Amino acid sequence: MADVARREAPLCSEQFGSGAARGCRAAADGTLQWEGFPDSVSPDYLPYQLWDSVQAFASSLSGSLATQAVLLGIGVGNAKASVSAATATWLVKDSTGMLGRIVFAWWKGSKLDCNAKQWRLFADILNDVAMFLEIMAPIYPICFTMTVCTSNLAKCIVSVAGGATRAALTMHQARRNNMADVSAKDSSQETLVNLAGLLVSLLMLPLVSGCPSFSLGCFFFLTALHIYANYRAVRALVMETLNEGRLQLVLKHFLQRGEVLDPTSANQMEPLWTGFWPSLSLSLGVPLHLLVSSVSELQQLVEGHQEPYLLCWDQSQNRIQVVLSQMAGPETILRAATHGLVLGALQGDGPLPGELQELRNRVRAGPEKDSWVIVKEVHQVLDKLFPKFLKGLQDAGWKTEKHQLEVDEWRATWPPSPEKKVL
Image (tube, rainbow, N blue to C red; front, top):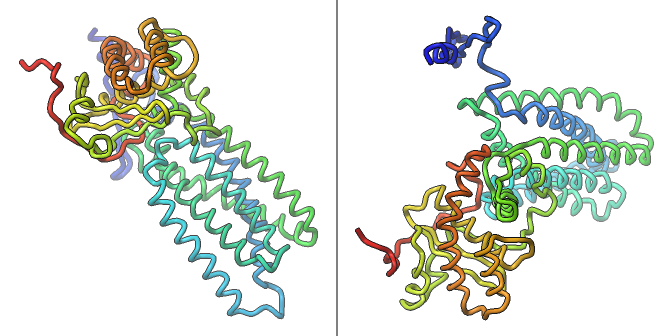
């Protein structure tokens, strides 16, 4: 044991200036292994950054073609063009984008990190659409202002979504409290790629400026490369925290086969194109006053809920709303989400464990007014099932001390369940 402890303890360390110190350990062959890259980042860092560089390079070249088209449409090189008209068009375009940035950040800002991979892919595809509008704008001068305003609106949405998801991915990739370092290096890498794209654009633009069809062909080729590289970059990510999509995949596999998928397998199976429209509406952290309006309704909702959350199930709309207690932590929220997804599975297909299969048969045969009875009985099933599921998640490598589930800020307190034993 002492030899093992000596091998694991750092033998020496060094630092440059005020930077963080790095240590070293002895390898089996007697050489020194310095701590740092790749151990300071997640295993998916390198493949993601390689494909991210490819997509950034393609996007830079496409952006140059789009910028050339916008300048042509505004009147650069046209002696009859009015400077004041061009300035007004530019100001209207920027103002539209600023308003769109504010509205989109207010509307979807809290949801971007919950589905970072899907929003990342969505943002890059929307950016391609925006650049296509800019290229097509000079062809229809009558609609030029409206087209460039729409394009800039899309680009501002891309900016908000891209910035938010970049922060979420940086948190995932930084493994030694080095988020600032990973973020700075990612920014420097992107700057270097854009610089290379700028130099190539200086050679490319004179070749395509006199041939619109060739310019459009180059744009479509670069767009295809951009989307493919983005897809490969997002697929390379292995997120070890659970959002609703990954939790649903892992839970479904667990209910059907009794084993928990590891993060790599679940991330490969996670849908990237359909994650925005889940079949089940699961709302965590809803206000209590939306669910109850009388004492009897509150008593019915509280009955059978021994955990610090209350769950309401609307079978007709396949909607589940969860009220969280002040004491609800990450594990409670994870159980509440699991509870909701199990109820959703009762309305779906596929094999289920014995007790849940019996409940499914009752759901399909019984009236919707008995939903609260099913909710209560699923609670009892989870008392035995969830501890096994949680341990399986931890053993498979999932980080259960935090999550990426979408949770609102409402919290409530309520009288204890009549069935709860007070010691």
